[in-house]
Length: 200
Image 1 (cartoon, rainbow, N blue to C red):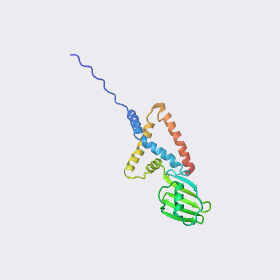
Image 2: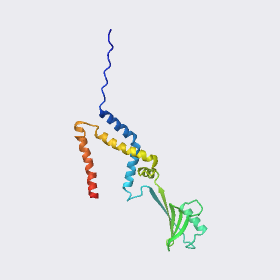
Image 3: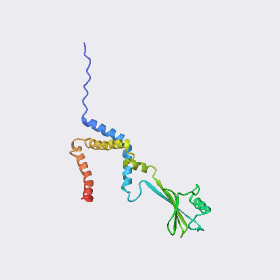
């Protein structure tokens, strides 16, 4: 009786194989949130140059002198709104006088008109949220709290795993004691130098 050929035994995969696999799929899984954090980080890094959450829109129009500097007639208010493209009825939250030559009309918390009684120029200033970036920044700063905190924590741990598995992907001359180690040390020199420079 002829014995059936035996199947060759499968070799155990080295741990490095699973490290590479983990690195790959964590990278896929966290790709979206990495984009969110990267764009938000770029935005808030330049907060002294611009507002990463809100944008200000300004619009100026020229008016004829008011008959009464302290009161807008209904006809004058209608003309002002028409020139600014405001279709609603004149019903502001407040009208006040910050100085002898200005009238401020508060339409809402983020929308106001300033009228100069010297030049009779009116300027409307509207503050609007940046549509997508405002949300990215809120997520980056963990404003939602609750379940988002758990997800953000898992992302932080995922980044650590990505860093460590990336460091151990290669062996030999290209590994941690060779090329990978040199690049790792090189990448640490600049941030450490900046920390010492600004916080010594």
